[in-house]
Length: 446
Image 1 (cartoon, rainbow, N blue to C red):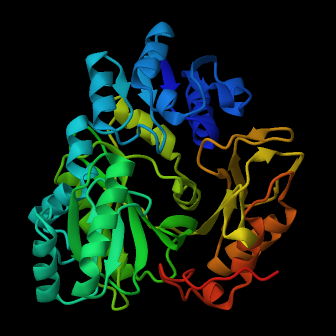
Image 2 (cartoon, rainbow, N blue to C red; image 1 turned 90 degrees about the vertical axis):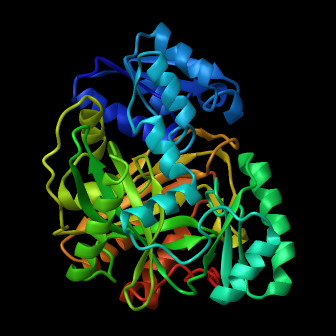
């Protein structure tokens, strides 16, 4: 087992990893930018190293600074959390070269699944259902138009290096193609330094359902059931739950088997998720793989009583997994609390938290790094907390979430708590009638 782990991340996920390491008797090293010097992950780690100024490219994306921090503190492993360098194959390779264990997949696995066009080709070869579309990257706009006319509109073009909805455009006719192609490539080039595009048939009203998987170094892979992530705005998830209210026993079995097949096709090591789009007749299609821990991992932990960070560390240390697949016996919901004003089109709201009261009670979990007096920096993602409730049934989990949201007080900045309160009262959400389009016409009620 590792003696000391450096966490190459910030905020609640850094604190989350530190807690599990402490329970396992592993020393921890926090890295931080000058904007995060007062963050809780810095306070609770055994050691802390400043790695640069606030901009991410000068701190949390600064590979030489992070490797140097690991070397001067004698860390023998690095946990990347999510975001930042968590799916960066170059970082994984540099860790290998410095004899530091990257707690995650190998560079080859990241490359195999990180590039979406390559990942899709891998899934087709493995026999996993995929959305009809181009076999690889489009050579030019004319190839895209020809293929679209053959498949039928609507179609969607996607950046092969994309994420967070960047470099994606829905196209409903050949007349729209050129403008969509130009703007998507430009956006992708600016965001990812790669303007490669591929094309898929656009599914009008699907659900976004992901399967949590775990694989060890010996070829064993298991799935830990599904999460429904369909409540999203501009491709950013806001509410997740498990099990999905749309799921059936037969569909879970099929999707679980497909996810295991997908992971085994690249000899996957670590935790990860296979993400699918599922249409109204319960046909499912591979969308992408995330080769890291997910933001929404706590709801899976709550329904199967499983510390995913602990398992992730154990797998990285070479410990075998049981290979058991899990089916949830409970129901859990996660609301992402962002420092954003839902009444002003979710405009970011950085600033100082003047007062904080976190909810508690049976079946309520809050993962956060904030405290009264904490200053939310404007430099990073606006998520400041995750509120999770777990209960025997979905109805009870929603009732518990309503109560917990009422108790959750954050003053000094605007947050998405009012949005979540409204969602928990929404008739269609309560009935489980929603898809990824659910929030397209959503308006906050004052």
